[in-house]
Length: 253
Figure 1 (spheres, rainbow, N blue to C red):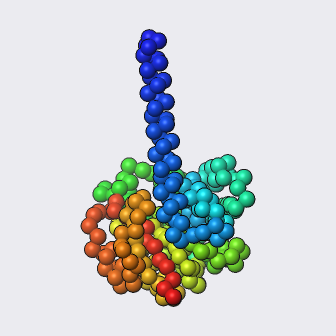
Figure 2 (figure 1 turned 90 degrees about the vertical axis):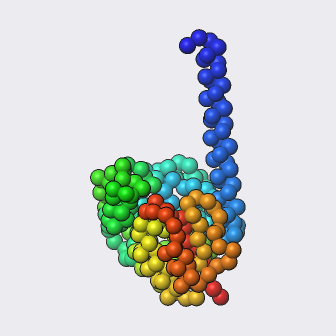
Figure 3 (figure 1 turned 30 degrees about the horizontal axis):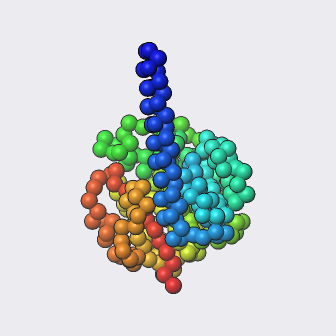
């Protein structure tokens, strides 16, 4: 490679780096704007399954007091190194379950896919699953807590984001009161679990629902709908096991 080629290669690499940074900033701005409809400065937010913190970052940008709950040590270390100096952040190195104690988490090749749900793992790694090329060969015992306990310790959140790869129903079973607003991930491969979550939330008190697809940061329905309607919509969604997004639930008062 001659001098001119080296200069051109450096120039192209710098361009690509700037492009990646612009995209990351755009995604951050989209997340911050989206979650601002649920949260305001000074309010408490729970980030259950914080992972590497892309939602934590948005919540902190809004000015919330963020309780980031994450069982994977690799992710906790990243959260600490990236956001640990922010006084509005509390990092809790635990998983959330229906009761406090200890539970196994299955660690994936990709930290975003680690899960405590065998059913979800079996679904997504099946022959027609979206993550059939990944492995969950490592198991780690982690400490668990409940949403009720976290509320008792840190206060009731204005919003609670839950992203626990198929373990959502267990998380909700540790909640005995309504939260003003929350979100949880859904996957068409385990839509029965999603339906159980919706029904459980509706039993806690009057609630309305909406949803988003993938990482769109956009609500699909112009208005929130009741339990029966959101279940009908989910069951009629086209797509395969890879189809998914987030359900949003609000107190209907």
